[in-house]
Amino acid sequence: MYDIKPLEEEWKRYKKKKMKPWYVLMVLFLLLSSTTLFFLNYKDLILAKLANIDNNVSVSLDKPRQITVLVDKSLTALEVKKEIIKKEINNNKLKIKTEASSAIDDPMKYHHPNAKKVSISITEPVKKVVKVEKPRKKMHLNIIKTTSASAYKDVEKRFSDTSDVDDSLFLARTYFDKGNNKKAIYWAVQTNKINSDIEESWLIFAGAKARSGHKNEAIRILSSYVKRSNSYEAKALLKRLKK
Amino acid sequence: MKSRYEAAKNVFIDSVDIDDYIELNSAVAAYKQLEHSMNKPLKMILLFGRPGTGKSILLNRITEKLKHQKEIHYFDTPAIDEKEFFHKLFKVLTKKNLPKNTEVNFSALVDFCKNLRGKREIIILLDEAQMYGPEMMEKIRLISDTRVVKFIVSLHKTDDEDLIAKEHFQSRIWEVIELKNATKDDQTSYIHKKLLKKNLFEIANSIKDKDMKLIHAFTKGNFRECNKLIFTIFEICEYYDKNEPSKIKYDQISKRIIEMAALKLGYINV
Image (cartoon, rainbow over all chains, first blue to last red):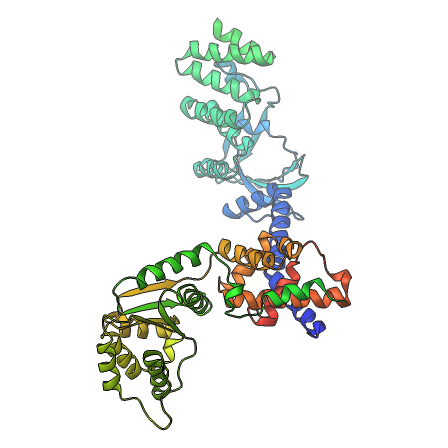
């Protein structure tokens, strides 16, 4: 008869050795799961951070970050906390006026309800630092304003990375105001693809369509939106288009 | 008190006892093939297979079955030297013992065999033939050329011997019968039949299909290894039954016990 005890001990060691790879796999699985959960929970923050790194803008959650936005009349749509740090005005002053009166000249143009008349005098290259507070994330941002054409490209690039509707809507609005209907339509559609409930994108799209000679299409699209949303703004624009 | 596992353990003591022979599908096929080959006018037949595939028991069984119909002789253990082998052969051929202090003259033996042509047909089963040297094998071949003595040569098939055996016998052997390791199903029915033969139904029933799978994996279908493993398993069961009954389930053999037996026999290591 065997001395069974040493054999039992040997079996316990064998079992431990056999189970080792499974324990390792379990630990790896737990690690992977927790990493995935962490990533899913903080996805927005991580993606925003990565996007900002790509744009060569340093971002810190604790400190205010700086991003570049375009100075345009449509900027009035952004809720800018008016803590504008004034810079000295040099020679060759370039006056950019955001005037709602220009829209009155154009019967196809819609009026943004939040649009305010802002008159900013800036130098070229114009750079102003403003503090913007995003209500949801409660992050303090320092925004450097610029009018350079490449900045539009920056916003487009940023949109391709982040798919942020604020960017696409901004581009749609800007191009619409500039009279570039084709691009306005394109960016309105991009905005609509991400969030079809943004009224402004519908209005820009219809307005740009009408201006580019597709009035019937604009009326059709706007009518369908009015049916869906019963929007006052959309109704007003539809009325103007039908005249 | 006697443990129920004691009887079960003893069933698997390795032996070539013909009474313990278990008729399996693969063994039946090999038996028929060998019997058929023996009826052909062949001089030498090679029975080939890895150790523990059932060559010896097959030779034993065929001897038992045919001993009243044919002049058949089973040389189970190889002769130590040539002299001893020819003494045995002399006895088979002449049915007389060789007188003391005399040696067999090989040429005279061959002539004697030639004289027996048409009168007798002798079958000699040589087990463990890998133990015979090449010179001896040449002499065996010359005797078989007389067509009086037919040799059935049983050889171990190991990795090294495989080539040697093939090269040595390819030109001389007319028929090769290869015994393969048992399949899982064959091995299962082997274990069950062995236990049922001794009326150990409950114990046979306690070895489930998954256990058979594990046993087959450890023993690779080798009957000798299978006997060893099952013997050890029942020995461990017997210990628990007598000393620590709480550690054993009577309606099944636990995987732990099978693995402990495998550790004991070195199939697995820590």
